[in-house]
Amino acid sequence: MWLLICLDQLVTSEFTSCMAKQSCCLFYSMLAMADDTNFLLLVLLLSSSSLCFGSEADIQCLKSVQQSVIDPNGVLKSTWNFENPNPTDGYICRFTGVECWHPDENRVLSLRLGNLGLEGTFPQGLQNCSSMIGLDLSNNNFSGPIPSEIAREVPYLTSLNLSHNKFMGSIPQSISNITYLNLLNLQHNQLSGQIPPQFDLLTRLTTFNVAENLLSGPIPSSLQDFWASSFAGNQGLCGAPLDDCPPSRRRWRPVRIRLHRINDQSSIGAAVGFVAGFVVAFYFPHLFVCSERLRAYVVRI
Image 1 (spheres, helix red, strand yellow):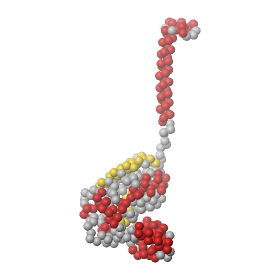
Image 2 (cartoon, rainbow, N blue to C red):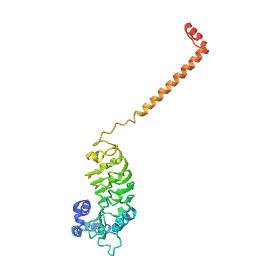
Image 3 (cartoon, helix red, strand yellow):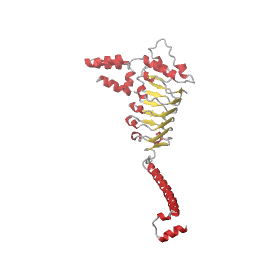
Image 4 (cartoon, rainbow, N blue to C red):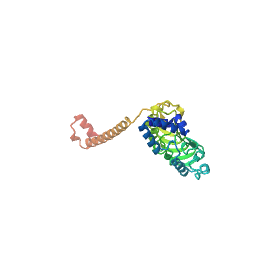
């Protein structure tokens, strides 16, 4: 029971408060000790996870991000200094754009890297920030595709903002597996293709925006309650709250082409038959059984 409560609070403000106070972990530990089975689960949980303590993995996560992006303004290079004599004091929480669960713990809560002039492809190593719930890369110059398996890298996000970049390609279907998402902003990129119908699984969404892309096709039914401005600037998108999708014409187009071909062939055949019949009738009138009046007419010709 304790395990379910703790995991459920991972994406709520109550759990945020819990992480901000180390005493919360002790409190739940005391509750679990009332039952030997729950106590065993607690020991296994704390031994295999670092939800309540700092993590070397989070430090490695930020190192990978710094190394994988282009930083022409030197913002990350100048403020992300990993040469710290005491790596357990939450020093990464003082990095530009890094928010922690607690200022004294190296546990990343969110990355707010918007409007820093960053370039390159989607940052690497984010899977090591295993308790991160917010990612903001907006208003930069990132390009290339959004990782197809993004849900494996950041499975617990409640907020994902990739707006005003140059991301291209299709929107990954795996985003639908980030089931805790409350905000998804992909506005002003170069994304193409359809909005994945699997987005019907994102039942927690309160903010959604894919405006100013190259998207096409129908809008999934679960997203049709958002404002039309959330889809504006995509000439190929259709369905509520935009204009209705045009009816499909795939069924009758091939038939029309086929009829044209049949008519063409019939016309050619009729013309050839007429010419051949005329020649035969002219040179071999005795082959036809005709009236005397017609025979005389053919001979005169």
